[in-house]
Length: 324
Image (tube, rainbow, N blue to C red; front, side):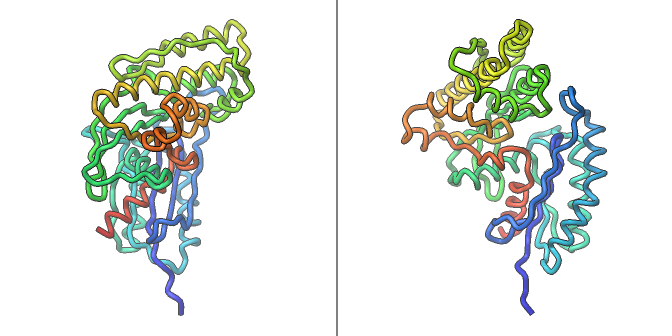
């Protein structure tokens, strides 16, 4: 009888997505299931209670599927993101359903549960998909860009996890909030990033400028939102407005990154989070940071598929912890 290789299971229940992933010992994905939470048309996201309820109603069916898929394979360990960030007081109710599910799976399989954070899961997924070499004792920068996070971080590999220090964060709106709020005002679906990018690709180069605001490395997006809403009211074509929005996002991030590099002396930066999947923002940053050789040594972007919320990085962390 053939013995099937064991797997490591990761679970992440964020404010946007229900995610389950199973990987083998090499880190290759064996099974993956990601479901966006349903947001009513015209709404800018979900309340925690509504998001938590969606996770609770989805997980039983998704775990039944996981059980069928893993038939004949032993689970070696389970990883779960139990809170947003690795910092004191970090807490969101939406992560509780994932934690309960992970503990239930682990109890049934008589294996360990490795708790990590949503942010560390993003970093681990980005490391793997961007082919980024995070050498022990060599710090690097991470920009976590999403609807709930605009964090520029000092990061160093620490055994199977990370030592993370906050450098700069948005002064008001997160970058994803900015994109989603103006996108919803334009009639786009939430989250609005993909539709906004598609519109921007149809624009010509004659689009209006929106001023950026960055203070000591920390960007502000409330002013750009006000300016963008004014342009929308003035009847600026949506394609042109979308291009203006993504340009001010890229400009704000560039100013923040340059400040961080000057202050820390670190020139390698890894981009994670849903906004990091935006190709127009990525192209703008690559153009602004020099020639191709310099870029390859400085800017590292997560694979777009793993830039958004996922459990792949969580499963990788569980494997690393279990095998150490």
